[in-house]
Image (tube, rainbow, N blue to C red; front, side, top):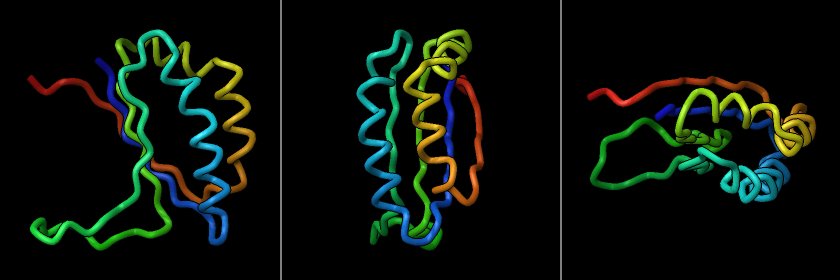
Length: 103
């Protein structure tokens, strides 16, 4: 399995527009061969967990793919090209972490 954690800082006033684009592309990605997870999240306070401060301008995407090949194919799809073009000017910063099972 291949995992990605993609933290995206969204420009002021663009959050709802960005989230709408995420909602639109998600079903297409989940239908792709090899996709096991494609979830956009927002920070939330959980009272009994001492976490970092909430980042109200950040959306974190968690992805899980069957293989590097499935991920590579995903990145070449038409819906991802359209999504990337749509959100290009909405994101201020993107930080990507990749990984695999630790055990």
